[in-house]
Image 1 (cartoon, rainbow, N blue to C red):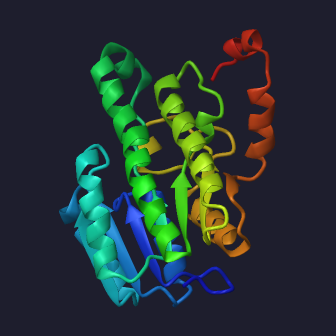
Image 2 (tube, rainbow, N blue to C red; image 1 turned 90 degrees about the vertical axis):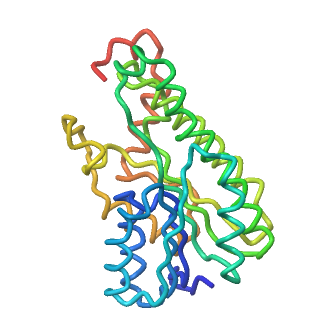
Amino acid sequence: MIDALGAPQSVLLLGGTSEIGLAIVDRFVETRRLHTVILASRDPDRSATDAQRLRDAGVSAVEIVEFDSAEVGEHRSMVEEVWARHDDIDVTVLAFGVLGDQANFEADPEGAADAAIVNYAGAVSVGLLVANRLRAQGHGRLVVLSSVAGERARKSNFVYGSTKAGLDAFAVGLGDSLVGSGAKVHVVRPGFVKGRMTDHLEEAPMATTPRAVAEAVAAAIASGKEEVWVPGPLRFVMSGLRHLPRAMFRRLPI
């Protein structure tokens, strides 16, 4: 169970190699209450190093399970396998996704559709499966890593932005459906996060870090806050952009 300070005892990371996801796990390791971590990874071999690092940091039980967000037909068995070995899971972090390149997507519509399956359809599939488990156990949190890119699709990355818009709407609705069950969804909307996924891009204003996102997630779980912006002022920036007339929005260099 999550204690009064928001510290969980067990975490399932969907996207076991995600920098942000691992930063969130590391943040909970610091509470000294986390004893079980399940890394659900498309590349179990790549997750082995992180698994050992977590054991060295004091997590008594660290498991790696194979998980590919695009293989939606395999999601049910993975979730059933995890819950069969554990009485319940306190926090599940949905942290998988691909950024891709807009020009490449426009030249390769099939590749764009593949990205949409990973970022949106895969999240819908596993998100519903996890939510059903949280509802049945009567407690738990699902942290969904959305993005400010989903607030209003920009011409420079509208394929990625559209997948995050769908994910965000799904996560908000899922959270509403869980009201009264004891479970809760936290929708996290970071801006530009400095890391492997973005190291080839020019840094955007108000850029943040995986650690800052992790701190915001930990604070939200402790307080119960359901919508999280990182950094916080982005909430107001995106509100302005969302309501900007379309003709003006098109002229922005974004």
